[in-house]
Amino acid sequence: MERDRILAWLADQVPPARLRHILGVEQLAQDLAAHYQLNVIQAQKAGLMHDLAKYFSPSRLLAIAQQAGIEIDDICHTTPHLLHAEVSAIIARDEFGETDPEVLNAIRHHTLGQPDMSPLSCILFIADALEPNRGNSEELVKLRHTMKEDLYGTVWKTSDYGLQYLLNKRCIIHPRTILTRNWAMQQSLKSHRVQQKDSH
Ligand SMILES: Nc1ncnc2c1ncn2[C@@H]1O[C@H](COP(=O)(O)OP(=O)(O)O)[C@@H](O)[C@H]1O
Image (cartoon, rainbow, N blue to C red; front, top):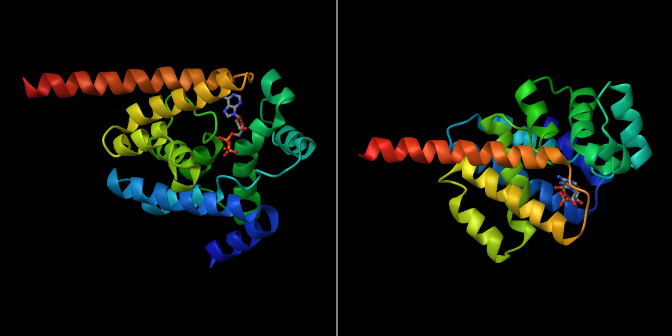
C-alpha cells in the first residue's frame, strides 16, 4: 500500500516527533474534510505528504525549486526553508506519483497559505497548525473550538497566530501570509453578513 511506502520513506527522513506531527495532521485533515463534506482521501494524502521535504538542506531545497522552475523571491532565497512546502509537492509528484492538483496545491500552500486557496488547502493549513501535538496553548485551544464552525475565520485567526509568533521572534515575514490572512478575514466577514441577512 502506498501509505506504508510513504511512511517508511518518512521514517527514514524525519525524526519521530515530526512523524507524530505528520500523523496528527493526516488525522485532523481527514476529520475536517469529513465535517466540511470534502474529499477525505485527498485530505489524508495531503496531510501525510505535506512535510516530505521538511528536513532537506537549504541548498537542496533551492536546487530542486530552481530545477522545477518555481519562482524564488528574495525572502525564500534568504530563508530557503520556506520552500519546503513547494518542494514537498514536487516530491509527492515525482517520488510517490501524486498527480491530483488539489492534493499538490494543498501541500504547496500549507506554510504560507495563498489568497483564494481551495477549501482543501484551507483544511491542511489549519490542520498543520492545530493538530494535537502542537500543544495546548490558550490560543490553540480557542482555535480548535472554532475550526468546525468557521473555516475561513479559522484560517484568518490561524494566520494571525502564526504572524504573532513571527513578530515576537523578530522574524522576516513573508507577505503571502498577510495576503492570505486578509483574504480569509474578508471571506469570513462576508459569510457572517450573509448568515445575519438570512436570519432577518
Ligand atoms: N509567513 C512566514 N514568513 C516567514 N517565516 C515563516 C512564515 N510562516 C512560517 N515561517 C517559518 O517557517 C518555518 C516553517 O513553518 P512551518 O512549516 O509552519 O513550521 P513547523 O516547523 O512548525 O511545521 C517556521 O520556522 C516558521 O517560523
